[in-house]
Image (cartoon, rainbow, N blue to C red; front, side, top):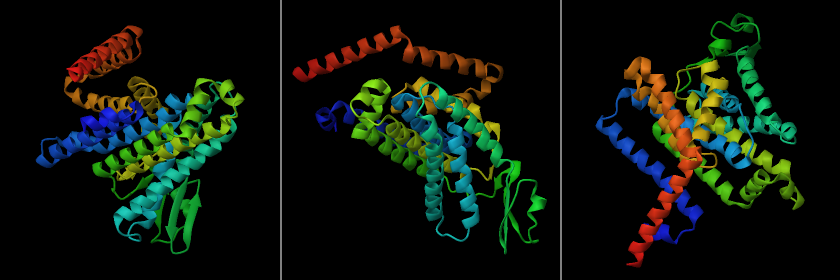
Length: 358
């Protein structure tokens, strides 16, 4: 293994290390779960952590590699969550086995979120400045409120729609409410598991890392580094921005599918899909290092588990959480800390080279 890593180029080596890190952590956690060493509290956090990792990776594609600020990632997650949950509830007992139904729901959630990403990106990505941040923030709030006013039911006559209340659906007595306004969707099949979350993380990494290493990825980074220079050599700015943004939205929709199928009741509340969720995902990206997918994964895991680890400290829990955030920010971005990390890495490489020479 060491010989293989030595012969790889730097990018491939970093990608392999990221994959191996995810696989090793999954294997360790599976052993802990099987042996009963992991508490029910942390076992319940496994699927949400996978969701946040996927969201952080997808947002890093926009913020870290495209160089644009998006504040509505929770909106794309919301679209993926509700479209897939609606499909799964309609097809429950119709499409078997459950895994096939979940895979179709996953595809539906990702495609719907990606389509909304394209619809938002086409007019906004042509502009310079922070317009994308403003529009995506508004989109995230709008989609959540729109879902809360819809009532959808189904009986032998077909689907019924209303924007008033469930009584206005005028269904037959045996009719079934599928989407109940602010109460959302209840009875979604709980198909999400930690193993499925792990597989989706690997798929997400595969898609994003291959994109970054491709010709399209290099064009996206060229747009980020110097828009004018990229345009002068014939790169279609809007096209490559749209590719990165819509792919990021589709992956966020996929995370929403995983999230919705882990809950028995799905509601479009500010806590689940509000701007606070979008800001939290952005914090994962910034603290993990913009452009570093491995850093985003680590930040998502640490910052999701930390409040639960500190729960026993009661009043001091959020204070310690805030201190950890500050330390992580300084460690990643302070010039002195970055210089220190560079010196340490040089010493490690120097020691390794001396041993190989001997």
